[in-house]
Length: 334
Ligand SMILES: C[S@@+](CC[C@H](N)C(=O)[O-])C[C@H]1O[C@@H](n2cnc3c(N)ncnc32)[C@H](O)[C@@H]1O
Image (cartoon, rainbow, N blue to C red):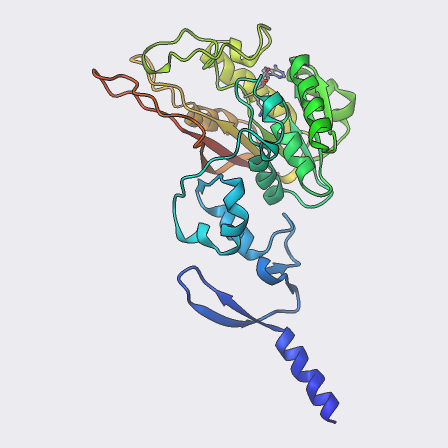
C-alpha cells in the first residue's frame, strides 16, 4: 500500500515542472499527456509538426532581433538572457576553429556564418529534413545543415571555385558534405539531384541586386568586386531585371517545396539615390508575393557586429552604415 502511494507521488512529481519566466516569475505547471519535459531545454509538445524545439526555444527564435555571439550564446540562451534584452552586442568569430573554415570561405565577398544558418534550419525543419539553397556561394546554408543532426541539403552555385571551397571546408572541419551543384539556378527544374525531391525549407541568400558590381559612390565606396563575371549572375544585371529574375527562380524553386514549408531569403538594402529609395527588402517582398501560394510572414533582423563602422559622408551629409540584414520569411500555403 505504502509502495503504491509512493509511486503515485513520484508520478505526480514527474508530471509537474517549475517554469521560470524572464521577469523571474515562477509558475508550477502540469506536464500534459502530449508534452515531454526536456529539462533545461523546456517542454516539447509532441503536436509540433514544424521542428524539434521546445516552447522556450521557439520563443527565443521569435525575437525580431537576431543575436549572433556563438561563443556566449549557448550559456546565455540557457539562462533566457535573450528574452530579457532586446539587443546584445555580439559577433561570430572569423578566425580559429569556431569560425568554421572562414579562412577558406573569406575568398567569397559575402559568406554567411554557418552557425546562424544552423539556427534557422533548426527552427524550420525537423530531423531528416531537406533544405534547398539556389544561391549557395561557399555553402553557409549547407554547412549549417551539417552542423545539425540528420539534415540534408542541396545547393546550386554558378561559380565552380566557390563549390570547390565549400568541399574543402567540409574536409577541414570534418563536416558531412552535402550535395553542391554547379549550375545556373534558372535551370533548377532540370537538375537531376533536385527535380524529383520535395524540400522542407528553402533557405537562400541571393545577390543583393547589383550592390557589388555597380559603380560605387559616397558612403559605399569599399569595392569588393562582383561574385562572378558571368552575365547569368543575378548580381550583374540591373535592379528591376534582378527582381523579375529572382522571382522566376524562386517560383520554380517553390514547386519543389512542401505545402506549409517555409522560404527564407536574406537581403540587405542598398544606399538610397535621388532616383530611387533602394529598399531592396521591401521590393523583394513585393515581388515574391506575386508568386501564387507564397505568403509573406514577417522578418528578422540580423545585426552583424563583425562589420566595422565607417565615417561615411563626413563632414557633409548623413550616409547610413548598414550593419544589419533582413531575413525575410515566407510560407507556401496551397
Ligand atoms: C550572397 S551570395 C551567397 C553566399 C552564401 N550564402 C555563402 O554563405 O557563401 C550569392 C551567390 O549566388 C551566386 N549566383 C548568382 N547568380 C546565380 C545563378 N543564376 N545561379 C546560381 N548561382 C548564382 C553568386 O555566384 C553568389 O555566390
